[in-house]
Image (tube, rainbow, N blue to C red; front, top):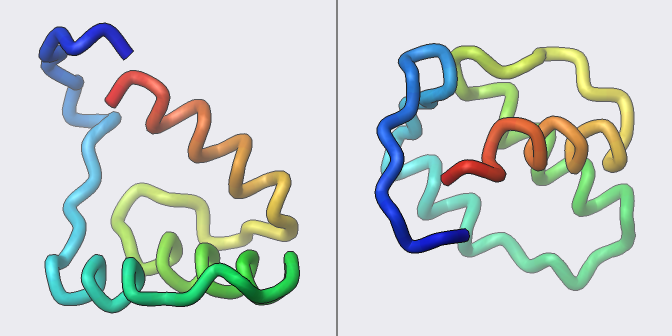
Length: 71
């Protein structure tokens, strides 16, 4: 993170419904890996432009790293 604003191309932007985001943020991440996977997967599949077939928490983390690292 450089604290410099970067304009992202449209294919790297995701519209996130505020209500869905707030509901997701309130989720408790104290569960096991399956609980965390289920929460992230259920949230991400609602977003336009995200894969709809995540199969593991590692896959989600890799996708998030690749797509959110420039935010």
